[in-house]
Image 1 (tube, helix red, strand yellow):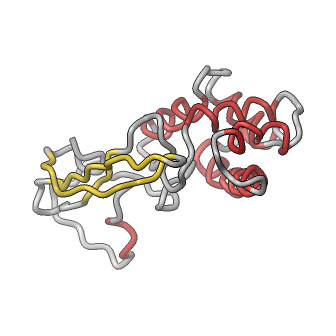
Image 2: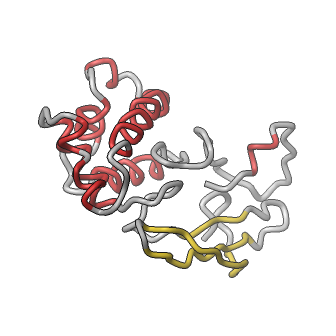
Length: 175
């Protein structure tokens, strides 16, 4: 099903994505609705979109930062998996930037938290898989995922059965 309009999708192609040192196949689908025609990549739940890390390590990193670990201590899981020693700091900076996306969707609860990790864990009720939990919350609110998504906040329309034209060309970009 297309996450934008709810129509059926069909196979559209594939490409390779790196997960640490391993290449994995990512399948793409295209919406069959002639008014939508959006395409979507089907990313496995063990892989984080837009980068070469796994969700297991990202979940560990978020929880470790919330427990007071340093970025270097929390990010050792990335280094152990083969990433450079600088990688934990870059992930930390990305997560700090993503906080504004989270605040946009989940305001007003966000002003209570000084750190993105505490905010994320609060929103998902300390779920064992905070990344998946946050993505599910976004989906229920009909928004793109806020973490590691190619597109900034994009609300899915409730009904796309009527042809709509947007001058904002990013409106039709898939999640």
